[in-house]
Length: 144
Image 1 (cartoon, helix red, strand yellow):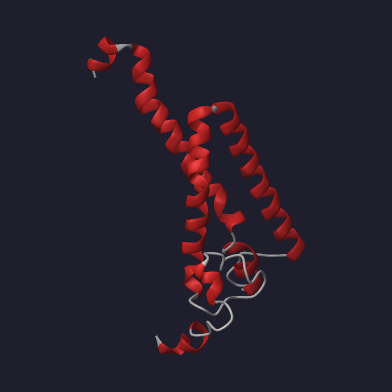
Image 2: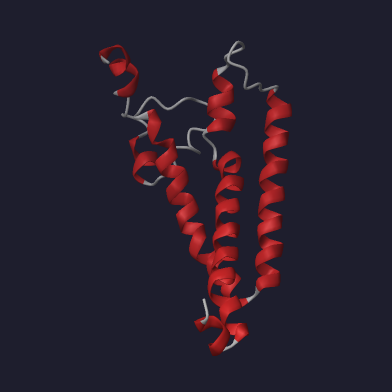
């Protein structure tokens, strides 16, 4: 457990990025030695800040929601592909490369498509659960 203390305790220059939940973006190419497992918390915070805008868009204008979701998904996939090819990254365990972890794995553009899939399924489930029953009328929804 103590073998990694030297790397984990280097928070002198990067502590500010941890406080602002930007430590998975800044520093861009270097591995952060200050509590480096917190990249996931930063991703979650960034995604949860986007979540209210997307769900409000779903509630108000479904066509814009689907267009925005598709656009964000395609942007993330395109950006991820460019980063992978430009830096010749591989996810193979046998060709372990720190750049894969620092340039791709912990970045929000690699993680957002999965989060976006959850938002889409959640909004679709909301429509299935609550909006379909309203169309049936009060008699039909009480039969369930």
